[in-house]
Length: 364
Image 1 (tube, one colour):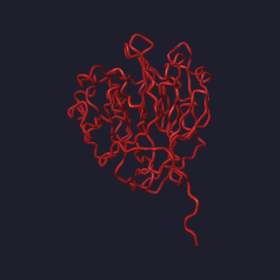
Image 2 (image 1 turned 120 degrees about the vertical axis):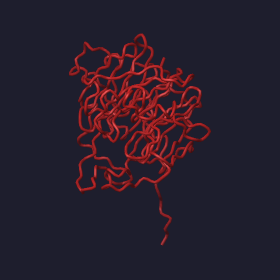
Image 3 (image 1 turned 180 degrees about the horizontal axis):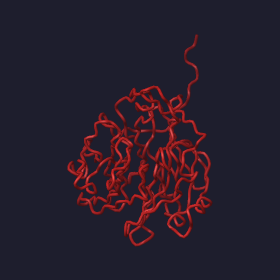
Image 4 (image 1 turned 30 degrees about the horizontal axis):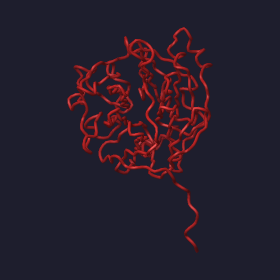
């Protein structure tokens, strides 16, 4: 009997940049000078520092170990549990702190967006949020920037809540004014009919006591067009891609109920965690159900650029000045909360990259 039967084809040239043998990473960003930053939210692993820079192949707490130690005397200047790091291409690393270790309610006063100066490696500015913006159910997930509008630019943050309304949080970086948009809208909410299947198995919450429930997570992936005019976003538990004009998001004279009619639907791109845009307006998105990476062209055409068994949950993407697409692969679906308390993750987690020949979208 011939055992060499046809098999699934894999493609896309991926290189290993860094292997992680400690805590599980979620975020990666590459600065305009090629510095690489990583974040490790506190989801149960032994997280010694929640933000790090890869220096000479080693993880170094960033901007300092002290900043990564929770200080209840100064929650605004210490990192609690960071979900996302984004270098803006203009000398600043932005740190998005959920202040919600283990998906708890955010510690009051702890949820924040922090600007770190990459020249001095010092915190330059901290934006905190009111209780109308960061709700008890909020989980701040990812952030994108546009410095072409307003006096100091705007930030757009996804609230990927698992038990409350999803939303896009809009932040005026001049004065820190923040407000929720598309709050609980279909486009920012989990798809109620979506059943995720990863590595051939249905993904759902499976608790130690044997009880189960559907896995539901709201708006997560976010990308901004190369000209700053369009924001792309997607719920984590959904295969759908949506977009909206950033001008509509900023315009508070448009009521939220009317804003939902301004959302555009791009079709199915696969189920994605992170997304990123290049300088030509192409959007890159993971497909965690199929161990793949998709490229979505400005005309809506979608193509798969990588399909590889090592892409075990593509989380966050970043495009470096070297024209490589970087992606964190972290086996998120193998965590114990999906397997009756048994952790099925295998070390190492990885930071991979592939050459795309495109530069990151500018933020100004």
